[in-house]
Image 1: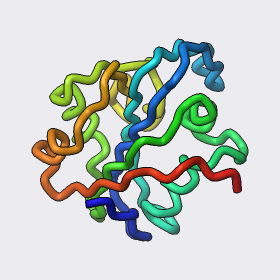
Image 2: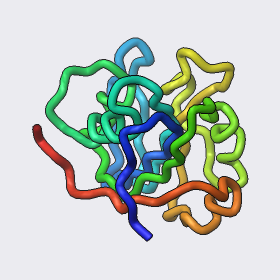
Image 3: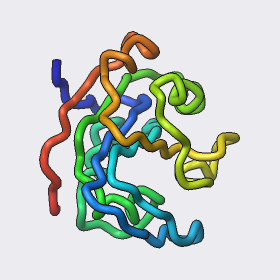
Image 4: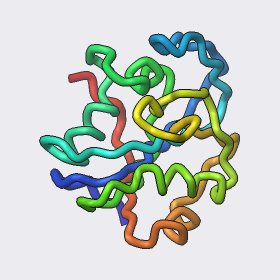
Length: 151
C-alpha cells in the first residue's frame, strides 16, 4: 500500500532510477559516475517537518545545493520511498541492511559525513523490491514517489 510519509521523525530510503550513464560533480566529493539503473539513498529526518519535509525536499528539483543528494537529484527519476516513523535513529542500522537487498555501495562518502559508514548511496541494475526490504524492516511503509516537483 502506498502511503505518504508523516510529519514525524524517522528513517527513509529514496529509490531512484537513473535513465542515463553520466558523471555528476557532487560538491567536495568531486565527480561521481552514474550508471543506468537504480540508486537507493538512506537518510533520516528528525527535525522540523519530519519525514514529510525532508523527503519532499529531496524530491524537488529547484533548490539550493545543501546535501549530496541535491547534486545528484536532477539526474534521477523518483521511483519509491520506503520509510518508517520512529523517534529512534535507525539510519546506520538501515545502511548495514542494504547488502541484504543485493545492492552495491556507490560513491564513497556520499551522505555519510556524519556516519561511520563508507556511503549511504547504493546501486543495483534492476529494481529492488519493497517486499524484500519489508522483510528486513518489518514496520516500514512504501510510498510510490510522485513525479518530480519544481517548487
